[in-house]
Amino acid sequence: MDSGYLIECASLLLRWMHVIFAIAWIGSSFYFIWLDNSLKPPVDPELIAKGVGGELWAVHGGGFYNPQKYLLAPKKLPDELHWFKWESYSTWLSGFFLMSTLYYSQAGVYMIDANSAIRTPGAAVLVGIATLVIGWVAYDILCRLLFTRSQLLFGVIYYAFVVLVGFVLCHLLSGRAAFLHVGAMIATTMSANVFFWIIPGQKKMVAAMRAGQTPDPIHGKRGKQRSVHNNYLSLPVIFCMLSNHYGFTYSGELPWLTLAIILLAAALTRHFFNLRHKGIYKWQYPLAGLALLAVVLVWHAPKALPAAQASAEPAKPAATTLADIRPIIDSRCIECHSEKPTKMPTAPNGLKFDTDAVVRANAPKIYQQVVQLKAMPLGNLTGITDAERAQIGRWFEGGAK
Image (cartoon, rainbow, N blue to C red; front, top):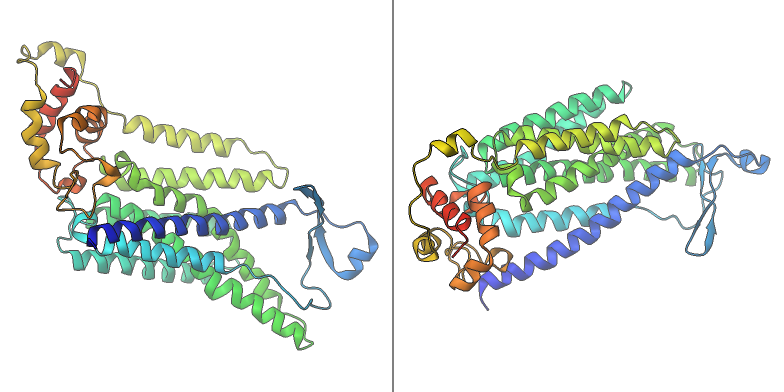
């Protein structure tokens, strides 16, 4: 069976699993943060005597629920406890295998471009994996040092660290790979929080109770710290994972600054919802997030030719036809977008420019990605020139005939 087809199948299955696992993990994270912020002190003396510190009533799916949270732990543990860990582990494992299938096995295509300082696939892969490790180590050290300090201080320092990583990666790797690896670094940190701190701390508390001892509250405090961090990091991770579909975010000027602005907007938006769960409405946070996103969108909008410059241009030559740009398509695009691509396992997005009819049908996409955003060819692997981009632009603006 064709190896390119096998890679495409693996990509489909891994991406599907990754999204499903991520929904389960982030969904449970959002739910428990909401639950924690929505609990009210109990008024029932019996609940207070049992050590319940907060409760709420909810209705869903035709049933009534009464979640309760103990100040430390119940006096007697039930025989069965539900642990929330495999959602995290499955998300990270499927994500790493997906990254390996798409990026590490094809690093020359996806991780290197004309502007990246690293020129060999092996070095690019090493930088990518090192980013995951260094990101976790730096975060963990920061958490230990600032455990008793302001969480705002922690957030500012960690945000500056993530921006620095993004700055470095945007110079070492292609913008597409840089954005994804910033997201993968944060996701690795989130999953490592569960694996190294949250679950082990909970197990120590359970073990102490089963031994008839009083659990050390420090484990709960550390777990809560890391859990809250994971909640704030979820929206930035989701953006990074989606960014590869939107070339203007990572292929424009100063991509690291674009990433920094969007991640800040995501964190501010998450903060608004966390406060809202407590009944606190601080609309300045989502409004600030929207303003930051608007700055990015306006900044990267395709630039129209100034009227003065347009009027000073010489008369336009004869209309450009498909026959004029067909050689450009054949030399710059067909290696990926064809029935039998040579630089990709299969044609991205199923676009195959072997026939003129398909090229004409996709003229708006070609114009946007090649001329306006200059996001294609990916990493300019095929060396398209500005003159060739301009010729494609004249063809489209002349009616794509």
